[in-house]
Length: 242
Image (tube, rainbow, N blue to C red; front, side):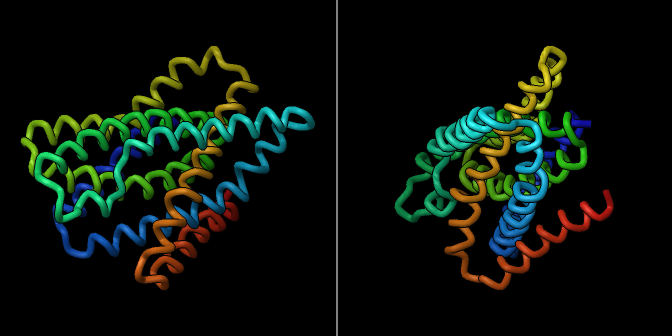
């Protein structure tokens, strides 16, 4: 099931491509998807992942769990360093060649980023399919703007190159999940717990360094509030249905 979930994650990125192609209302969809992702991720961290980590690691081992979470934060920080800001990619002073270069660099960073995320999502699915699906929903919604960024900066490039790069980006989370599936038989419960902590750190990075700053500068605050409430509602409803 974890393999299927990581494969579906790639579809969210492709949805971002479709949004840019259709153009109309792309900013509204981007803001709403980010807001829903924020509500979903915050709820998951508070209601599911942190309690699970506290149950798995106790006493001095909590320091190890915290260190693993920091590794997750740092890993995404390093990868995101090579991903330019979405708004910057449309700056009027940029030449066509620079925009294409940004698109390629962004794609490489996003592919590496998604492989690591795919491994983390698969690890969470190994412990709980329900939590894994909800984490995937939050990560997937966050990936919609990534797809918008990639296609926007690659529009002037050749069609073959667009298909190759976007295709690799779309399957990158699946590759990460597949890698975890191959090595999971030799992993014990402690190692899987560490991987979950790394995934928790990644979610914290996405929440505090990407989603919140983006929504803080978004024009339609009411839309952000609605999206956050929808994201929280998804987690609450799933908890009652469990």
